[in-house]
Image 1: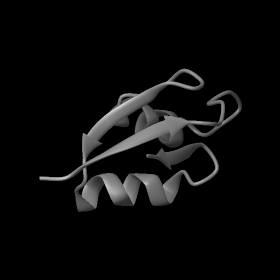
Image 2 (image 1 turned 60 degrees about the vertical axis):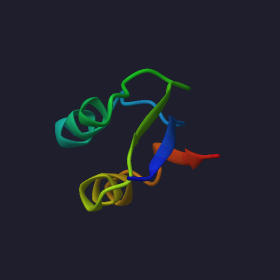
Image 3 (image 1 turned 180 degrees about the vertical axis):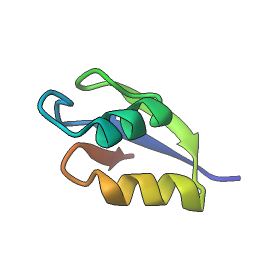
Image 4 (image 1 turned 30 degrees about the horizontal axis):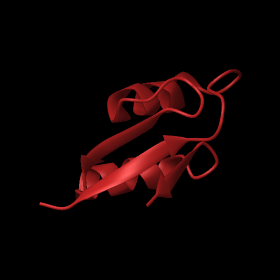
Length: 58
């Protein structure tokens, strides 16, 4: 299955707890961290909820 790289570009400080949990679920949590995850519908849905905090990088 395809993989995508995700970079955290926004801080979780002063964000709702649900958004912090989504970041942790994606393997993020600190600024400028990059993780490679499977490209699934669940991951795409999580990214859609955090467009202000994460970016897909090449």
